Length: 162
Image (cartoon, rainbow, N blue to C red; front, side, top):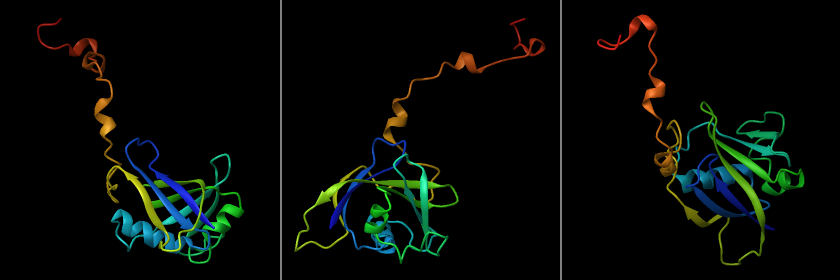
């Protein structure tokens, strides 16, 4: 079985990827693929969080078993059987930065394709250690009126405005 996932960064309208992944692919193999596809450093701690239908964390899979299994022992198909149709790929554990992988369907396996594979992309790769994803939409936010931000105490009025 080959599953199609849409990858996005929560809060970003610019970044999107679509991946096709075989059900028997381990989360560790998926991690390796994502590291290469997104140009991330391969020597960092990462984890996957399996989300239930309500978007709450149901399982956590790390490089080491944290109680739900390790990434090399759990497959994509097993997470789907558990009802975890979305995965969060935590690529910066210290800042809890994630890429959400949401199941969007099943596709026919192509005999000539190598899986997992990238089938669609939009936006540039996120920087692994930045404070956030530099979204082009951030420049289209409304301008804040500066006068509302300035507040002086009665005895601190600027010169000439007493």
